[in-house]
Image (cartoon, rainbow, N blue to C red; front, side, top):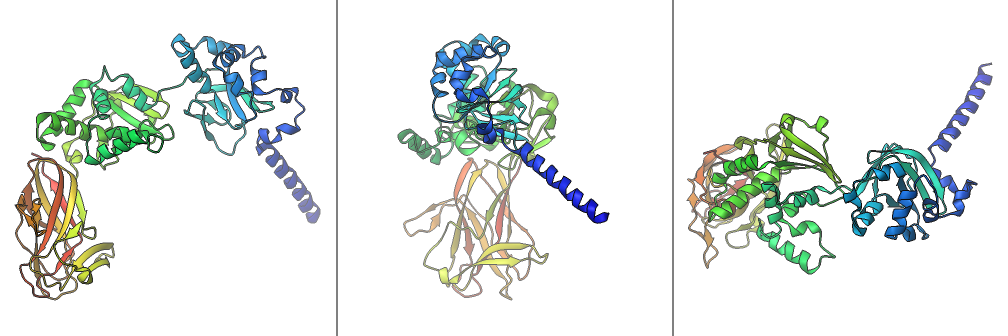
Length: 486
C-alpha cells in the first residue's frame, strides 16, 4: 500500500508541476496557438476599430502612431478607456506635439504580458519614460481592466486611467526656475563651472552630443547625480526660498572665494549637493536620516514636507526647513599615504615600498615607506579637493615597524614649485614629529588655516634634512584634515 500511495503522489506532483509551468508561462509565447480572430489584425487595426477605446484610437490616427502600430515589430499598448480619456486635462492634449508625447507614453516595444516571474517589471515606453508594471495588474498606478488581448504584432491591456507623462526631476526643476531660488541656482550651473573639469566636459558635450551624456552640460548633473536620467530613480529635496537662503548663508564663511558672488555660488553648490539621493523613497518610508553621496548625514523631518511630487524618475519633496548641522556638513578629508601625487627629486622607486600590512588589532591597511634614499628633505607630494576656508586640525598615522630607531618627518601645506621642482612659499609648515617604532595610533600633528576654500594642490610629507640612511625615512598610512567650526 505504501508503494501505491508513493506512486500516486508522484503522479499528482507531476500534474501540479505541469500546471505550474503552464500557469507561469508568458501568454505572448502561447499566442500563436490561440484561435482568436484578433490575431488576424495588427494593433493599429484593432485599436482603431473597438468601441471601448475609440477615443484613444482617434489619437493614434491623429498622431501617426497608427502607422507605427501597423509595422512588423512587436508592441504592447496600455489602452485607456474612453472614460479615462475624458478625464485627461486639456493641457495634456493641447497640440499635436503634446498628443504625441501622451500617446507614446502608452506604448512599449516588445511584449509585456500580465504573467511574469517578477513582481514589478520596469517598462521603457516610446516616450522614453520608465513605468512600473506591477503584478501584471497595475501600470503606473492605473488598474488593468482587461489583460492580454493579442493581435498579430503584439498585445494590449485596457486600463482605467490614462498614463499621463510625468516630468522627470530635472524637467520639473527647470519648469519652476522662475519661482524658486534653489531651482534657479541649479539651472544656472548650465553656464557656471564648479570645477575646471566641468568646462572640458561641457565642451565635449557641445561638440559631440551624440557621444557624451546630457549630464555633462550642467555642473550639478555632472558631479552629483544626473537628475535628467530616466533609467535611474532618485529622491530630491527642494527647499523653499527662505530656508535655502539660510542654508547657503550658514556655509558661506567656510567657502570663501575671491569675491562674494563666487562665495555664494560655491556655498549654494555645497548646500544643494547633499539634497539628492540615489533611489526613490516614498514619504512613508523616509528614514530620519539619509546619507548623501558625499557622506553627509542629512536629517529628514517629514513634518516639514510642504509638497510631495511623484515624477517619472523619482520623488521630489518641497521642504519648508531642512537644517543640516555644520558638524555633519563639514567633512573630514582623509588622504591615503599609498596614493601619492609625486616625489620631490630623483628616481627613488627602488627605495619606495607600497605595503600591505596588518595592525595590532588584525585590521588590514596599506601605506607607503621610502627608506635609504640618501636625499636630505626628500618629499612625497599629495593633494586635496573641496577644502573649506577655516582652521584645520591635522592628524596622521605613520607606522615605523622596520627600524629600531626613531626618525622625524613633517608636513607642509600649499606653495608653488620653483624651477628646480622644489616647493616654496607654503601657507603653513608644521613642526617635525618623531615617528617612534611600533606605534599604530593616530597622532595629532598640528593645525593650519585656509583663507580661501577650494583645492590644495600641494601637501608635502618632508623627510629629515639628512642624507643618512635610517634618519631620513618617510612613512605614511594616512593624513586626516579635520575642519574646525568657527
